[in-house]
Length: 208
Image 1 (cartoon, rainbow, N blue to C red):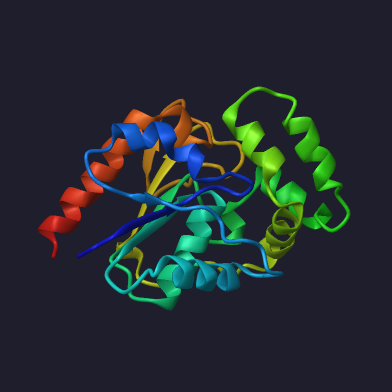
Image 2: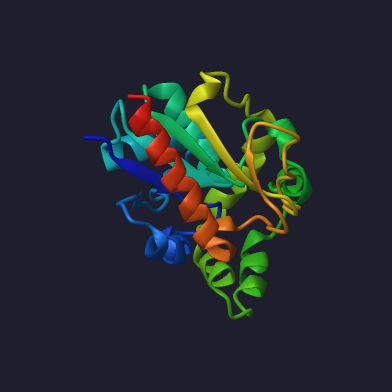
């Protein structure tokens, strides 16, 4: 049996997929980040995710933003059926905007203060970020510039990107594009994101 697993973005939780979950006609396990134990690379986090969720060969993994990058590390470690990226990147060069600006400052940025400010705004993303582990956020941001990226089979990777994503700019090719959409596709464009995932599911059935 093929299982689907999706990781949230950095600073978010599985709750970011609540709207998407309601749009889907099949089961995806939306998982939270593991409790932070001092990991300093995406590969180390990926191994924790694999072990704690019993992800195995033939499963389908994916995620939003950082979640997609860690999903690619999972795909580099085990023979997954596919890797799905929602507003994510395949290498550090693709990551510009906020994440790229944050990474060189992560060692000194008072992330707890940023979280506190974010928590003042009444929206799900700010609330999740305000509750996230600041040490995890700092470690993942610091690692970003040195991330080697994914060099595995490109036909296993399926990408959906917002045309107006200012965090991770829309790649010039190799992905499905949602016009007018920003970075948080699973929240702001849940219906279209669900249609994209349904399309992948159908495609994988025909190519088994």
